[in-house]
Image (tube, rainbow, N blue to C red; front, side, top):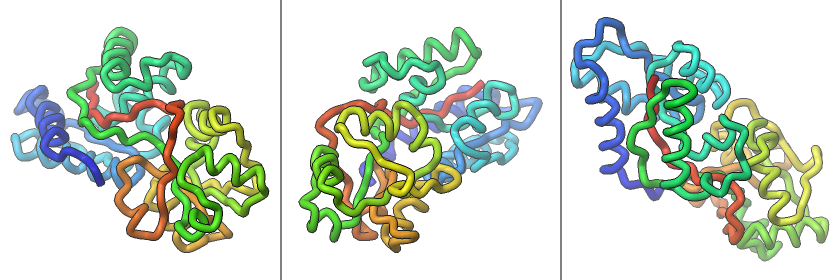
Length: 250
């Protein structure tokens, strides 16, 4: 996993210091349902509690729409989010700002402050954008190193089945963006939709060939990809948003 832990720690510490150290009400801390969300959510919990702030643990609350709805409704006070998801939140996928770390952060920070009174804190530097990983045996047999290679492989009727979340399959800035950029289309028989958004589950499904799966939705920083015998496919065309983790709060 390529992530600058020092910078990530600074972002979470800032979240704690920006809150009253002796808040009248406990701070409701949430996260998405995936492994990375749980890790970041628990870091936030520990930082707050180490500064004497009472908390309510709502880590792994749900998928992106669930957690987003929770913070905008007041059910949550703070949770880690990806800056590039602003494209999804504000239905603005075509703005090139989302493919630039700084521009995307500044845009979502401004929009959420103006429209929802939400504060985005300093983001971590790691770009944790979506990618597709394939089993190494499939990659070697099909000569796959990039999404452009995958497009060629699919047109040659190569065997392919992707494990992914419904969010990845349906969101315009996720799989549909890959399909449009690289000129391919997966049918229902080539997809295994799994509940939640945990890439640990999709990667494991590909590694174990669950229901014929040989590829997985993954994040750019996923360590288990190589460990479980998969490899990510390079993307020469940037179509999905730049995803920097940031502890936003109400």
